[in-house]
Structures are given as structure tokens and as C-alpha cells.
Image (cartoon, rainbow, N blue to C red; front, side, top):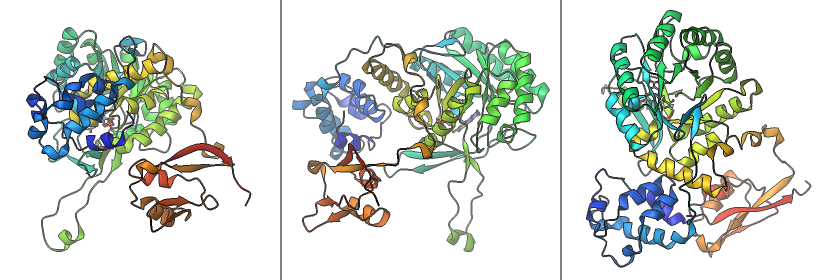
Length: 494
Ligand SMILES: Cc1cc2nc3c(=O)[nH]c(=O)nc-3n(C[C@H](O)[C@H](O)[C@H](O)COP(=O)(O)O)c2cc1C
């Protein structure tokens, strides 16, 4: 499904609730589901849903589209249909089961502890949609009074989130209420994984919350040492920065229960290993990471401050969503490569939207994947795309079981000094895709090595004598007209 034009249109689709396009289809197809599958990289799911009926249809879906007929749903559907032959593999037998500390889960996907997993009704709907489990919103014995508004987002030009900031604290239900929810969930969904996230202020509170959660049916505990929005009473990410406290509080929880205990660690540190090792010494069987990254997304504009207008207060809060995935991957790689942590379960999270994002973490050894921001943006239904996309991926890798693929990338993450520095990989122009915009020329001129000429005919040309193979042109090209040549040439002597 390497059709970039289709890919580019997809992000604009609003993925409407109760979508008018799907309701209008005279052939009982579901254009919204197809567009959703494409948005979440579940190409097999998209192709499965499309039929040749679209070709000769008058496309009432377009007339009812919230973006208007110009959005061109028909073009996307017919172009999908043309690619149908490409993904024919039978993937239905691919096994994507995983486990958390030896307890089987039907797929690797859990809601992460946050607003998305904060009530009985929400968890029930998530389970029914196909999530393998939840990490329930962190419970505590503190009084929680949330601020309003408490979210902000950095957005891409198409309106989707690139990063999300929250200043939310912990569950504002009482512990008693939450324990009742756990009992009910476990009774009704015995095969779903209930990970209970807890936070105490001292050893007694950690032990109490651990014990009561186990009694109420928790399959495992997640110790929240990492909330950046809890800064009082020796709690939150401040605890996660002090290995001695991580060890002490982990031990307090571990000694109170028989179920496995995971430590949820903070990325607001230089290196995560000291806290992970401390959790292991305290008896934890695994780690969960990353929690959100301390950040400020917006400030009042100076004009506002100097013209006696009402200005908003700003608090440092936790960043999540697509922008944090690279940081999460680097921490998971660090944990996975640390031999002393070899047997610890890794539950990874941070910016996962598609099965491809998820698999990157699994290729670093994560056995479970947790998600919040993508669910806040698109709802629980994304689980269908995650599951089907992953199943197809496993089948197309020639393997039967996801478990056979875990950790494949661990040796491939190397120190920057160990990268091959004696070769140049030149870019290659794909002329038929070129839009003649000159973006590659400008970037190479001002951010590269002046290796691209752009003449009167508006065709970019490469000067291999100047090109250092940095690939900036490949990255800025808006239409995949420049690709990596895959030819590795020995660097000319300077
Ligand atoms: C609104 C919001 C509330 C959150 N509340 C909690 C929480 O109570 N406990 C916790 O461990 N993590 C909490 N998190 C962090 C998430 O569980 C997760 O670690 C983080 O958002 C990264 O994953 P994501 O990029 O998929 O959102 C919260 C995140 C958000 C966005």
C-alpha cells in the first residue's frame, strides 16, 4: 500500500462518529472504517472492506462527507480497490498472544493508566472493543481536585495531535469505590488483564493499596513512581528520580502481595536503569515506561502580558503522544539492553498510534503495549486496527507467533560511534513523482551541502561530488520523489 497520494489524503479525514459517508453508501460498505484502517496503517483491513462496486457508483458518500465532496472519498476507495491483489495472505491464524509476567493476554494491547481507564463503564467498553486489558487510573488515598482546563496540544497542520500535555493528577474516586469497580470488572471479564496502578505517600500506604487491590481482583500492580503532576508529599516523578525510594516503596508493595508488581518509571531522568535496577532489588517483576515528560506547550504572548489583558497561568505538565515516541523508544532500548534487567517484563508506552509504532517497542523486547493519547484522540475502536494490522504483519513476516519476533531489534541499537562512517548512501530521484517544487534544493542549499542544482526546467539535479548522503532531501520531499538509493559507496578520500 505504497500509494502516497492516498496516504496524504487520509490524515484529513475527520473519522466522524456515526459517519454520514458510511450511512449514505448504497452498497452497505463502510467508507469510514476503510479510512480508519488506512489512518492506522491497517492496510489489510482497508483492502478487505473495499469492493469494486465503488468504481461505477455515483458516490453519495462524498455528498455526505463532512469535508464536502472535494475531499474525494471515491478516489481513495477506488485506488484501494486497485491494490487489492497486493495483500492476499491469510493472516487469520497469526497468533498475537503475549503475556505479562507469565499471565497470558489475548493481544499485547492495554489501555494505559489515565482518564481513558478511569471507570467501570469505560473499561467495560474497552474490553468489549477488544483491548486485552487495562492499567486502571492510578488510585491513592489523597484528595484529588483537578484543574480546568487541564489539557493542551501541539497540532499538525491537518489538526491531528503531534503532542499532548496534561496536568491531570490521580483518580478522584475513593479507594473504596475503585475497589468495587475492580471486583465487578474481574467478575464480568475474568480473562481480561486488570493491572491496578497505585501511588502511596509512605510504605504503609503503598502496602495497603497493594493488598486491597490484590483482594479486589488485580492480576498485577503498577507502582506509579512517575506522575509529573504530583509534586507534594513525596510522590510522583520525584520519587522515580530517587532509586532508594523506588526500592523502598517497591519492597513495601511486593511484600504485601503475591501478584506480580511492575514499576512505572519516569522519563524525567538522564538514564532509567538506576530506577529499574532499584525496582528489581525491591522485588518488582517488571517495568512500565514511559510516563509523561515534564513540559510547557504554550505561554501567553508578550502583547497580552503588557496590555493588562487577562492572562492564563501556565503549569509544567506531562507530555505524551506522537512526539514522545522517540524518547520512549530510547528508554526502552536502554532497559532492553541492560543485561541485569534481562528477566524483567517490559510494558512499553509513549506515542503508540498504530501497530507499527507498537511493534517498534516489541522489537525492543516489550511484551505488552499501553496506550492513552491515541485513545483520547480517536476512541477505543482503534484496537481493531491495532490487532488486525499486527496479525497481518506477523503473518507476512513468515512467522506464526508474535512471540517469535520480540526483541529482534535489540542488537541493532548501537552507540553513535559504532555507525559505519566510511560509506556514503546517495539519494536517488524518482522523476515521475517530482512536483518540481524545489524544496530539496532550498533545504540542501541552506541546511545541507549545496549538492542540488535547480535549473530553469525546475528539475533538481544532484552533484555527487558535493553530496555527503545526509538524506535531508529525502526527508523534506513532499511526494516521495527522492529515495535512498541503497547503494553504499566508499567515501571519497578528502
Ligand atoms: C490525561 C492523562 C492522564 C494520565 N494519568 C495517569 C495516571 O493516573 N497514572 C499513570 O501512571 N499515568 C498517567 N498518564 C500517563 C499515561 O499512562 C502514559 O504513560 C503516557 O500518556 C504515554 O502514553 P501515550 O503517549 O500513549 O499517551 C496520563 C496521561 C494522560 C494523557
